[in-house]
Image 1 (tube, one colour):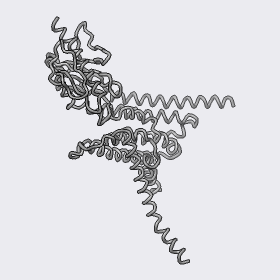
Image 2 (tube, helix red, strand yellow; image 1 turned 30 degrees about the vertical axis):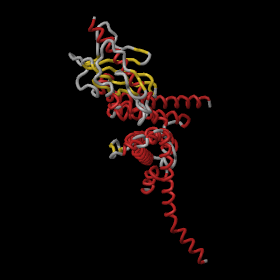
Image 3 (cartoon, helix red, strand yellow; image 1 turned 90 degrees about the vertical axis):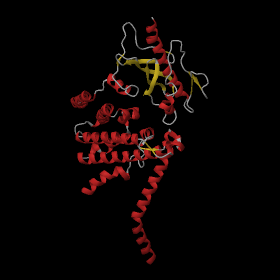
Image 4 (cartoon, one colour; image 1 turned 120 degrees about the vertical axis):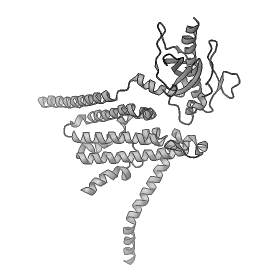
Length: 217
Length: 196
């Protein structure tokens, strides 16, 4: 049971990483990752909403009539998104300005709606919370990673701190949409390659044994 | 069967109403704690161009905002008892429609400019929103016969020429428009007022 719970948590970070494996929520991913900090903030906002909405939907799964579950989910998600928006506007105005329209658009972020529909509406509260947290962390890590790469290549800085004189030879294309696609695609290929490599290694010893046995026979 | 259907519709509606009601109440509560006063927001952003207390500019019989086809003045603040005006000016022609600047005119000279509400493309249009670009306007004495800054591509030749940032001519245009409307406001509302 315990390892099951751990699996639920890590599932979103590695195996079904929403950005690199499931390719969900691509629009905010490409739009806000011009800077590492924006990616991190977007990820944090999504994690909060995902955690809260998953818990709430899991709690209410018996109360919400099946026919109107989608509108009910959207109302719950929209509530949490609006809370995030109001808190950010008050306390982090510069990040609020940087994320712009993509902050309220978290309401229709397919990761959140998909987890609500596919996981939270048919699992216990604790598991739903872990799933939300895992998926949120996966999303945050991916966005921050893309943001770091794009910021270094495109602006020559790391979390807003300039790296030497790298800013003079930076390639602006990487903070424009085209560069976003390039970085996203390359990182996706890299992550998939590494995952495949890890999986091969996991199965490699058993397949070797099998091969030996076959050779003996 | 009929009664069952009616009951189902009633329950469905009831659950949705309750969820929406609770959500609304929760949002109202959060809003109570996080409400941002617009005046306060402007005052906070205005510290980028003026370090001190600003109050909304009021003058009897004169409407503060003005509008032209190249931009408009959204609001004006001044430091009490001093010749300091912070003008929130919107210039049209930006990459995303328009952009808003804060223009500080102190003792009849442009003292400081900062972006107020502008989301130009990072790395391209954003170059026209940096202090290195704004400094081209600084120190300009505004007289009543000043015709405004002229936008030029390439090097500035005439004294009132301001050259565009390479790769950001749209953002540069909007910046110059915003500064010009702020200058026009100053000429119309402050200089003419003084002369009459």
